[in-house]
Image (cartoon, rainbow, N blue to C red; front, top):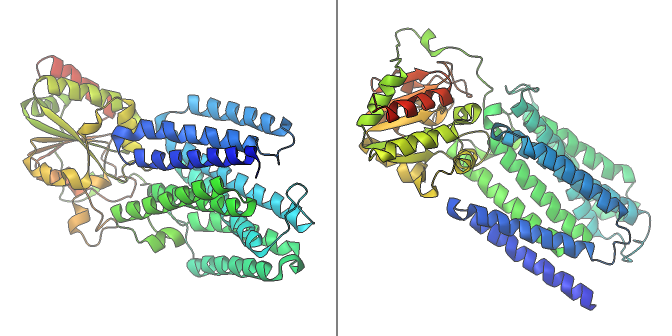
Length: 474
């Protein structure tokens, strides 16, 4: 091993440690920014070390790709509103999966047609298995992420698309890909090339077939799971290319995404097998108004009414949801909290693990508005406190505050852990209309006697509340 090789391996070791510290930092809001910085630094070190390897004999295409990708990524991200961040993540996963699959196809072509030109490697069974796994998962991640992007963006229906025998067909296709892969590993050079390409083709088809029957409301779990697939594909790439850094980083990405998917499935009361095989969840509501239910009425209040309740409170809990993201109300929420705190009111934020359209969506929005990390509380930490809270301000949240999830066994969200907001003295719900939420389930909370509905754009309503607070709270 040359000195250069030793330095590259040392750089990979440092990068791997930084990746681990990155995940460690991302486990808490206080250390999140530091974790991101460490991850970026680790990736920079890994890229520089890889560019120093002797296998790279030309930098023209690398430089061109780096420049083009940087320009496109910067242009997209700079103009992207936070409400579109889930779509942006799904889109990034798609091209990450595509890149992994293309590397696998390229490496297979080189190794299957003779000895590797630079390293002298020949195609062996371990490499063949890694390449097939890499191409299959990379292809699945590509089309699956495109489907998730389309459902979130709205040009693919958010409703589940199902048909008879769907799961058996998907399982059969998955099994067929595994059989092909095993046959290629056994036959090695005697295996016809079409088997390898068909394996990738099945992955492309499964990405579509597995996500198509999943409702748009469940896309956060899908995005997390696809992230896991992308990590596993990268790990397989590491085995194929004999790259320790890809093995380590891919394993970290794959395992963390898998764990997050399981946590989110539990938070949504979803079976993890349903996440994998599809056909769960519902699409976006068609807009059936809650007032259409006979015998039910709700208490519609004004901004002044809500301001009076908040001004008289000593403790307030804010429950944000996707409606806050749509109206870009996070900064207004922070201003309202500041106005309340000046009056001696204790303000905290209840963050549900599946609020929004991606993991950590609400945390990202509130962090953007400089909401203190120590004011954010997850479900288990704050749920018992609602019974001792004077007022709860629900900003665009729906299913995560629906008491029916605890009592109505016929509900599609029955068993899903939700906030006990109905136990507080007063509940103020900010919502555009009385339409049902993304799951299409009517929210019982809206008809509770201690709930007041303030309908309209959340940002405008909250700015009105801030103005009322400054005028004395009435």
